[in-house]
Length: 456
Image 1 (spheres, rainbow, N blue to C red):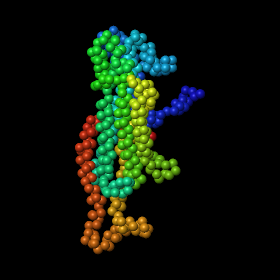
Image 2 (cartoon, one colour; image 1 turned 30 degrees about the vertical axis):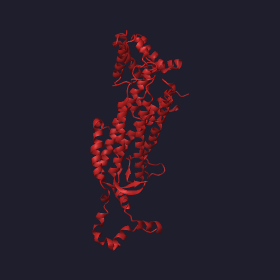
Image 3 (cartoon, one colour; image 1 turned 90 degrees about the vertical axis):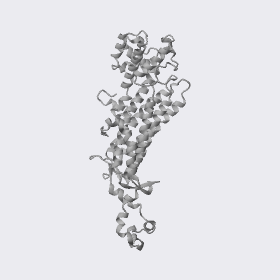
Image 4 (cartoon, rainbow, N blue to C red; image 1 turned 60 degrees about the vertical axis):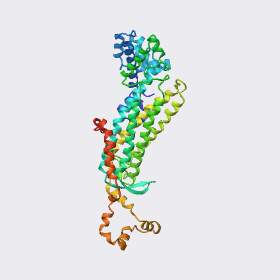
């Protein structure tokens, strides 16, 4: 058996989402420490509100609870859960052990979902608050990139075949447009979140109506007071034992949609890296391949694509869970949600941090972009020579030798300038950034200077 100091943590599976990639703030948001201290805060909010509304709860009991919010005995809680087979009651007992005076009123009138579901909603809300500034920074970095290269011609592709010219900046605006949609979606999903509140075992608030001797107004005021203390503006007016699991669908759908956006952007970057038009940042001591030292693999973009696939796949969990919640609730949601909710936010957090790192250091090779553009003007006749006869590409020689082109030979260089083929791409970039991108970033100005240093 492993002993202390022998690397016991390496003897069991650790999710790479936390051990390898995720930010400290997102990892903490879904940690046991944060979860169970939030449970204790919710029990405190409930006791305070019940006291304010006239239940026989003393100042001493409330003070005792306040002084023990953080000192959780996780060993005792684990032992209690092994005995009781009930995580909430295990923590009620553990909290009561260090708050003997308050023990009788901890969890008074509540059901397990009072702490469980409300804590999940707090974590989802706080998770969005972590993601939104990160997404705003990605948009900001990419907007700066689009502005810088608004006029740089590059070959457009449809069906991944050479098409009409565009600009590097205009292509970046295609990425930006999707990201702007994503930030609106995340903002809406965050604002739509409500608190489950104080609803009782099947959502009828019967236990609280009994505590307040049939006073409906006090029950409604209790619900509002606790909702406000938890930092929410509204609670769901109706619930079963749980809040509707469609809330989880809504939440994970916008994250999955973000995953699709990031996957598309990073796939484009990988394709352009192969063409040597654009590359992600490459560290001085970074190794692209153990066998091929000349390679510069787009490993950050590949990581984003890999994780984005996982993020997109996770949305199937809440879809299926919501569809099989029988009547007021069934417990087959619990184990699934312990995995799918945290992993969605952790994965979104990782791909945004990585994408910020990419967009802060994108390398453009203008001469390659222009060279590729010139390929677009090859004539079918010159192409036939190359393809069917195996000859050299003699387009310019053909143009110079044809009498029809004699009047413009002196202008040939100017006529072949790729900038004459990009249409209104530069103007579209300027207007799009001004009207649709910069205004979105206004609420996040104070977060714009955060840099991302990837450890791996």
